[in-house]
Length: 413
Image (cartoon, rainbow, N blue to C red; front, top):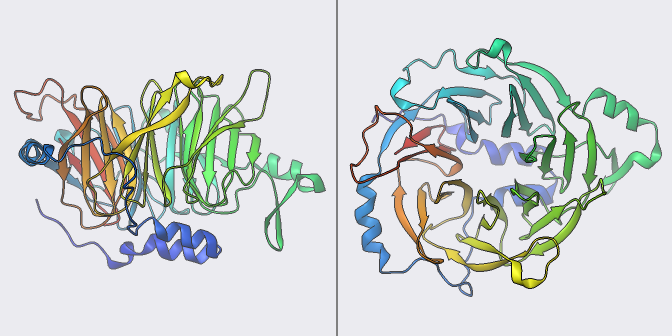
């Protein structure tokens, strides 16, 4: 596989941009995600040292089948929608690719669906709409034209909408203190929007930001319904929504917070705070049934939390630590789940694939190498292509897509 050199500016674009528009606190938080800090010796490991030999032999069953080139800056976000893979970069581009590597063409001239705005930190999909989160503090809503995914999308809204901004502009009660000498209306994010998530029914869009807020938007008319100011004590880096309606946020303040709305309430309330990490929480992932939460941080460990229905929590069970997954040599930057596999990307430039076994034991199936920079984003899906050869002993195979600060997207099987 030929690796083309990547322009040097993409190696430090994220840190440069964050410093240019964030206060000292947020700059410190964004930079910390690329630094390794001590692991967590007081949390038991869920992988055994005896599995190392098995891990080394199993890596031969995994290989990079394609490297997608076209971006000229750091890849910050990846997501799958239907038959396509979407990627967002620090130079504001959103590109679309076929999910099936066997149908990829060499040309990337016509796969840009949007560009010209701020760095794309995250996106999510609802029907024919794409919601993207940006470093310029905005959420943009894009609509697919004529059900043609590989054509440029039309931007139909920027959140907060003009209506929201005008409505809140003239009333003092709508202003909140965002910095020492600065106020803003509650509907505005005032720093990089780091992550997005949709409610299970698609009616609500959640956004979190380095400004330490959690906001809730109505997807039908894009109205801002709620803003939880100072939801954390530092920048919020990740958010996931479980199948039972709980919302989890992970922050540079080392905490994970669990939120929900109670029957009859319109506002989200804090249910519990999960505190075991000793450094910034960068990534979250949750199992399909909502019973297992994975958190990755600068401490190089992935903590595994499981629902404990025996603790008397009327909210549906608290989350308790059952152990940690270790193996990465630097900070965990991203997590993804597909079926019974957990994928982790790290500042050590590798992707690890973990599988849960009997009980609470986990094995590391593979260490995927090849990136020349920290792995910033991941997504994964079942391999549905008959054109990609997999091992005969595999009942089901998966495609893992990884995006890096080296500007490349790799597809591994």
